[in-house]
View: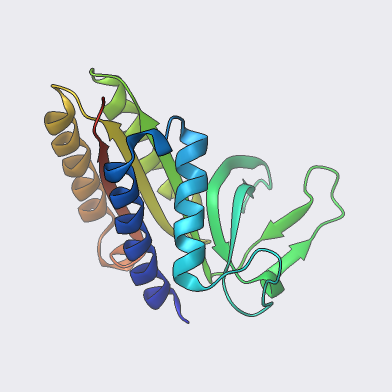
Length: 188
């Protein structure tokens, strides 16, 4: 499977996740729950079995440290990383346990916001901007889950507009490497 095929399966997994949240809003109470649910949905779609990973097919990892290519300093923690196990390099550096440097990876940042104010937009923008950290190493997806409230529609539009502006600013080179989706959770 190549990264374009993987992106399609991620999109299906996002739809699966949105359906589950719509049918059972209490399935996600925290960002950790959101990460777990989406990881499970992606795993099912790509056929990843945690107890029996295949070295040359994509696996689902969570909370993986990312290091700047120039300074080698930790500059982010990827919520979900899809990568082939045989592309993981171990490092003896005291600050790193392993490094992912494969161009065949997909970094996914998640955000779950409950507020009915602009903080939801600010947090989403921060995650969208993380693309600049990963752009040389991975395809990138920012996925934001918003609790439904009076401001959700406006916040969703503002987040999507910001993403479109960033994507346009980056140009064709990153057109098929940088994605964003906003999901909504009904509140009870």
